[in-house]
Image (cartoon, rainbow, N blue to C red; front, side):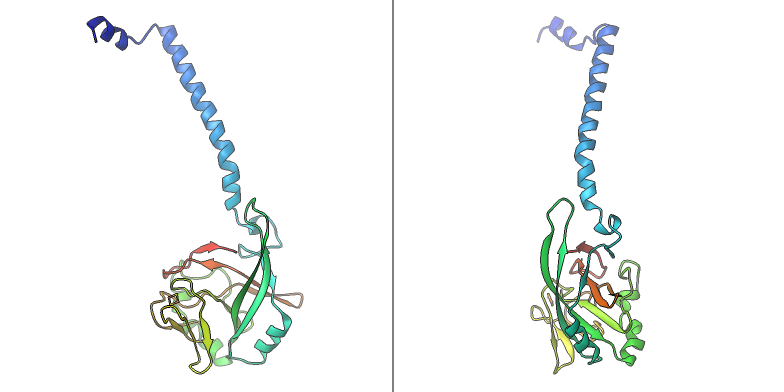
Length: 220
Ligand code: FES
């Protein structure tokens, strides 16, 4: 490169040329900002939980009816967990609503289990990150998510041993969901439960597995 070419390359131009260049830079940044805003608003909107939009939905998900016969069977056997399947529809952001079938393990606590629930579940009352943001026990009923908090397998109730046992890595939990053995980092996760005009309802929530803190990852 010759000396003149090098000089021309460093030349910043006249004041008019500089101001025109600055105007073009500002205009480009402004247009880019508007395009970014248009793209970002729908993405943020899809992350807002349904509960903030519709008053019919609660705890960040949707309320689903539990079958009455299962509830009656649960109420008649305090201390004996009952597997309860239910259907619910969930719409996530702009995606179409999907119908799902899930199941919970419901327990009608005995008076003794009810009294000792808090002491048995330090993982629920230890720190704000571990707590759930609703009542874990409602009228002595507790509904546990059927997902093992270790790595997400489905555990089962073993009536002989009087404990929940996960077939994947052997984690075990008492009837109050308390962690008894195995690699699970916390006890079972209770789900929101309510009585709405005579119908017992539950909200399905998926918590992140493999850690002590309860972090919601999905409602479907
Ligand atoms: S997934 Fe249940 S013990 Fe590992």
